[in-house]
Amino acid sequence: MQNEYEIKKLMCDIGKRVYDRGMVAANDGNFSVKLNDHEFLCTPTGVSKGFMTPEYICKVDENGELIQANKGFKPSSEIKMHMRVYKMRPDVGSVVHAHPLYATAFAIAGIPLTQPIMPEAIISLGCVPIAEYGTPSTDEIPDNLEKYLPYFDAVLLENHGALTWSTDLLAAYHKMESVEFYANLLYKSKMLGGPKEFDEKNIEKLYAIRRKFGMPGKHPASVCLNQGSANCHTCGGNCGEDFRQFPGYQYDFVGKKSADAPANKDMSANGKTVDEKMVSDITKKVLAQLDSNK
Image (cartoon, rainbow, N blue to C red; front, top):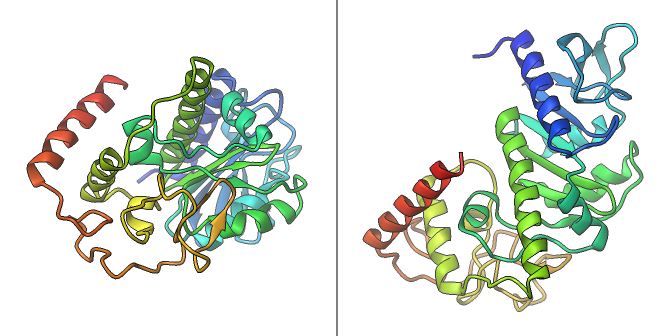
């Protein structure tokens, strides 16, 4: 288990990665790590995340109030956003906020990342909605973010940037990379005439793999089981008035299940048994693809 100093060093390393990849400019961005229920490390306000050293890192409590900081450093002005994530998601150990170019462009255009175009994004990321705009450093952002937290592991912040969270800092950062890579590919495929999306059958296969992996976090494959044969990438807003609605797409995020929804994780969302050999073959292919991208 990492000690506090090692976590601070990792935060500086991630800060440099975020800066070097052009996911932030100047002093933009912020991220945090949960030490325990009452102590959190966070990046300081007003400094470039690409040039931090461990003494830059601040410590706050669960309310975002300062516990410790070296002279000249103050916690991120957007720490309220991070604290709301931790409050709503006890499984989360780290939160990352950045302004990756393509993902932020989608956030500014008001386009959620919901199109099923690549296996890795569907399996590991799921859909990425847009949380309504809020003034930075105020309660507006966490208030607008709150309704998305139980159902997603990443959101776009309208006219602002992107926010990801996961079990630890590295995992939360990797989700940010995945969001930007997904947005980049989606943008470029639109420039080439529009992406070719997976059909419902192929999405179901990928959802089955997700369930079989038992991956942490929230995801449509395990959170949402819609009526009939629709799933969170293909339902098209036909879930009925009882279902919670989000910008760009409407799913059953209330936890309701249709009469034929599967109780067994090895069954697909339309109640049909998944072929084990098929899942095994696809799993091997996806793992090989993931390894080749490392």
